[in-house]
Image 1 (spheres, rainbow, N blue to C red):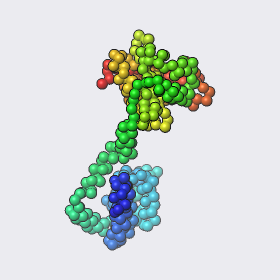
Image 2 (tube, one colour):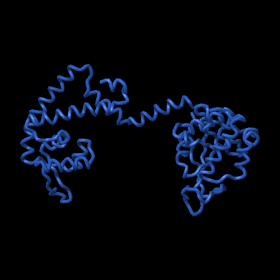
Image 3 (cartoon, rainbow, N blue to C red):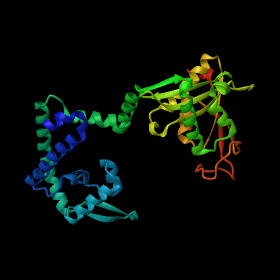
Image 4 (cartoon, rainbow, N blue to C red):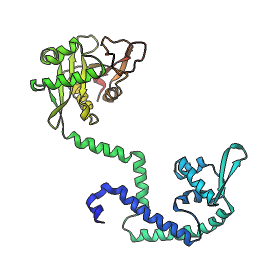
Length: 335
């Protein structure tokens, strides 16, 4: 069809639905031709019950891969048509068992002939085709059960967008971006303090000149993310990862992960062995990034020196304190 030539493989769902509708319409006419009074959507339930064993709706749903509500509705329709009947389970009165009615059992005998003829017909079509549709469906089902279409599209989208992402070192021209992005993030969860204002207003002197570094993420040449590396005067930790902030308009593109990896690579380059950071339980996306980068939780505290604004939406874990987490990455163990 010309429409599908225009849309390409993006319309696979629509094309499969059209094929399914065509086969389903013929299937109902085929059932009538054999004198089997069932709708095409009832067939999986009918086929399972045709083996003679009474089953619960839950068991039927599990066997045919349908939802419980879907099977329940189908059974109701089949009961109305007199094809199946419900009885109480003698061993458990709370359960209903579904079985074929006398009318349904008579139809099931004819079903054997229909299934035989249908199998031959499908095999004939397959022999005329260049590709085995049945095998292809099995392969697609297997592939999508391991990773859904949604997950696969997300990966491709991220790969495409990553080509427009660049991680670069701080330059004076990025001072305003460093300030605005840091302030936006801090004010969203906390409250800017004097040390924060000093750092964002004079990053060269207070961060870089003291042995640290600042990384800037560019998306289509626009600064959209920042992350600072602070030199620590501590006997246990060499550096601290701080002020990781990504603009909300580009979140979900993996920019935070790229910034964090850039910091780790820099610490390795500088000969550092331990990289420290502090976060809290409310920042789940950030914690996910840190743990993905290889950080391990080393300390938990209910207290923090950072001031929390009254309007802050961060859930408090104990009394009036935010639950803070300390993480460390031992770079010698990172591959």
